Image (cartoon, rainbow, N blue to C red; front, top):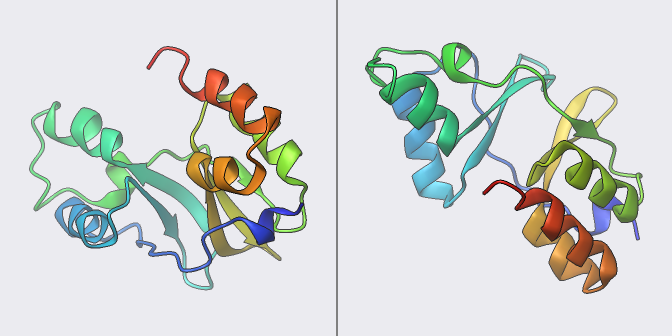
Amino acid sequence: MKVRDAMAKTVTSAKKNDKVIDVAKKMKQEDAGFIPVVEDGGTVIGVITDRDIVIRCIAEGHDPRGETAEHVMSKQVTIIAPDDELEEAGRTMEREEIRRLAVAENGRLVGVLSHGNLVQATKNKTAEKVTEGVTRGA
């Protein structure tokens, strides 16, 4: 099965100059803990998680109303292609100990594959093994 068969295709994204408070509001609206940060044209340049907001903004004493997404985003983003196999995506999640992957095609964001998407799509050992990897240290 391919990543495109399981990924979320409707993805909310942010720009690097968006205020952290606005990114947090998008997360609340979408019930998401992960927002890709893109440049014009849809190229992924980072991601922000709810944890990034807490650790890199609030806990550091920064005001989320004045801080930009660029300041708190993770810049090293693991990206997969929609035509990659789900098993490979699962191995990537396990190896990197991450729960979500940005999906890009021709350099443009086209979706997000979450651990939940993977579990629902595979319902097998791949999901079980990935769960062990992404929950290590949680």
